[in-house]
Image (cartoon, rainbow, N blue to C red; front, side, top):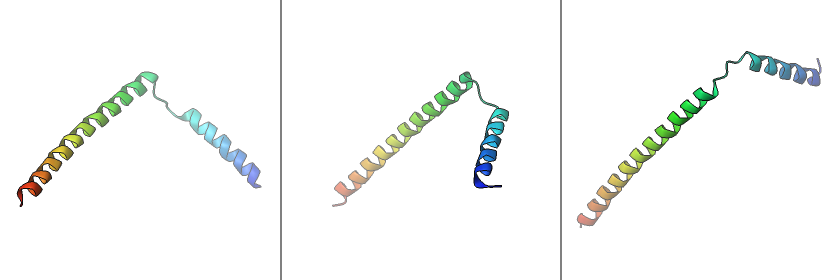
Length: 66
């Protein structure tokens, strides 16, 4: 089997596998995307608060350490 025939076989197998795949509905996609975006913003806010607090503590230590 030459390389061109192997490529054609590979691509046809990919097409067959994609037809067997169970795809989510648009409602499910929107729902999970919303959850991911909200979670990212919550973690970003949390990390911003922790970063700001640690920065303030380190700044205070260096200004009062003498």
